[in-house]
Image (cartoon, rainbow, N blue to C red; front, side, top):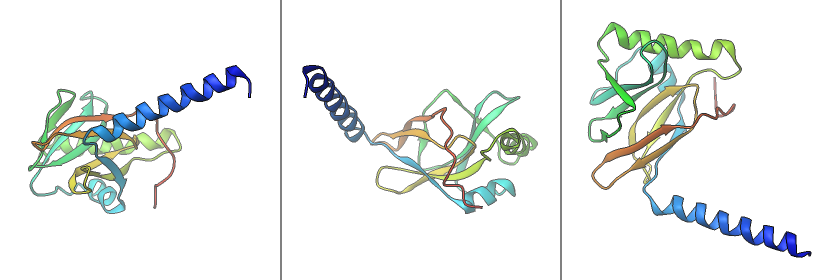
Length: 155
């Protein structure tokens, strides 16, 4: 093995170690695909004990989430919306149109904490997010990742 390859291998291994270590050090949750959640959003069903928020602009919302009231969404990037308002239905309708111009339709996901407990629900064509929850049940990071994966969409 030449010196350049050895150096590259060591460098990539070190970077992988840092990334894996950083991810395991925090309290990170995840999204998991859920067909029932998709149906609930598409039929405008409101979950009890949940507060709803959208991400994006009012004219073009991209994501709608419902967060269980036992958690606090601590982010200025999300706008709270009344689920009993006409705006709530409009947000779902706009998000539902996301899939018409591409290969990925909006889909429902459960938002889970690091232990796998339900935090809330997510509806969007964006299927990946960084979910970080602190020890006080505050969601300190719920950040969509702009890459949209095709898959895990069971219809």
